Figure 1: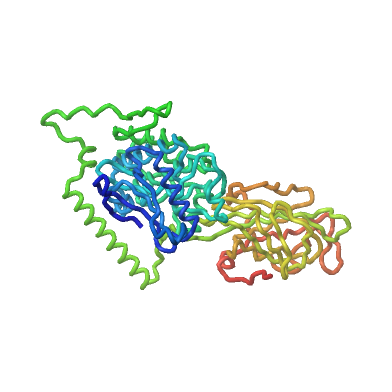
Figure 2 (figure 1 turned 90 degrees about the vertical axis):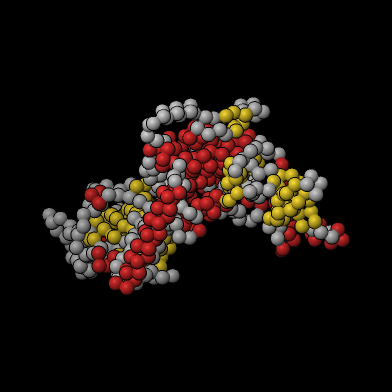
Length: 521
C-alpha cells in the first residue's frame, strides 16, 4: 500500500510504501522491500523515483516479525501510463518521448549494475517533469543469479511483460529491461502487444516461442523506430541493443533531451536533433504539426468515431449470436496439424514384414505446443520396435503415444523415425496432435527409395507441393501390400514383374473434423 504522508522534519509531502496485512509477516517479503529501498537509493536520475528513507514500524515487544517495513519515497503528481493507455494509443511523438525517458532511466540504473526486471505501464508515472520509473521490487544486480531461483522456481513479474530469459532461467542481464522497453513502445504506439493471447500461459509461450508481429504502418513514424523495436524484442538477449542506444534513438526521433550516463559513468549527455526552422509568417502550418498537436475539436471527433465503431462491433457480435454468423477472432486459439507418414520395407533381422518409417508432424495452428503429443492407431496390429528423434513413446491399446523433445511453434515441424514389423497390410491411422485430428497423408516407398532424413530439431512445416500426393482413403485389410513388402494375407506371393500396390492415402476433410476414437492409456 502507498500512502500520502507529511515529512515533519523537512515539512514536505512524501509517499510511504509499506507491506499490507499478512504480507508483512513473511520474511521474504520484508527482505524484498528492504532490498528495493537499498537499490533505488543508489540511483539518482530525473526519470527514476527517488527514495528518501527506510524503516520498520510496530511494537518492539513483538520482535521483528511483528514490525512492518516501509519506504519513504518522492511523492509524484500525475497519472500512471497504464491509466493513460486505457483511452487508446497515443501519438507517435508522445509515445517515443515517454519511452525515451524510461530507457534513459534504465540506462542510468544499468550503469550502476541494477536491472529493474518489471518494466510495464503500471510502473511508469507520467508527471509534469517527465516519465518516472516506479517499483524496483523485483530488481536484481547485473551478473548475479536470478533472485527468482531462491523462491522454488517461481517467477515474480507480469506475464505480459516477461522477457524470455526470465522464463528460461539464468543470470540477471540488462537486456531484460530492453526487451520490456520494446514491448512498452509497441503498446504505446498500437494499444496492444505484438501477440494475441487469451491466457497467461499463452502470454508466456509467446515470449519464448512466438516471433512478434511487426509494427503496423504509422504515418510520420521515423523508419528507425520499427527496426529498433524489432531488435529490442529479439529472443536472444545478446542480440538486443543497450538501453543507452534505445534512449538515444527514441529521443532523437522527436528532438527531446534525455539524461544518459557518460562513458566514465560520472557525466551526462544530452541527445537532441537540430531544431525545426520556424515557419515563415503567413504560410500554412505543416500537416505534421497539426496532427501532433490536435485541437479539442479533433480529439472530440476521434472520441465519437471510437464510440461509433464500438457500437458497430457490438451490433455485429449481437447479430452473429442470433444468426449464426461466424465472427473472426484472430486471437482465439486455432489448433490444426498435418502428418506425413512415409514407410518402406526394411531388413530387420529375422522379423517378418519389417518396415522403416518417417513421420513428419507439423503444427499448422496459431499456438505453440509444449509439449506436443501425437497419438495414432495401428489397425493392422503392427509392432513398433524403436523410435528415433522423440523424447519418449509407449504402446497404448491398439496404437502409440509419442511425446516430442521440444516445443513445436506454429508453422514448424519435426520428423522422427519408426522401426517396426509384423501385422496386417493396413497403414496407421487416427493421427491426432494434442487431441486435434490431423490432415494426414501416408505414402509407401520402394525398398530402393530414400526416406526423409531426421530433422534433429524444429524446421519449417512442409509446403503442400512437398507433401506426399493426396490419395483416396485406404480401402482396409487386403487393400494394399503389408508393411515391409511381405506376402499378402493367405500366404500368396506377389509376382516380381508386377509393381507393389501402394496403400498411401489422405485423410478426407470430413474425417478431420469428425470426432474419432482416441488411443487411451
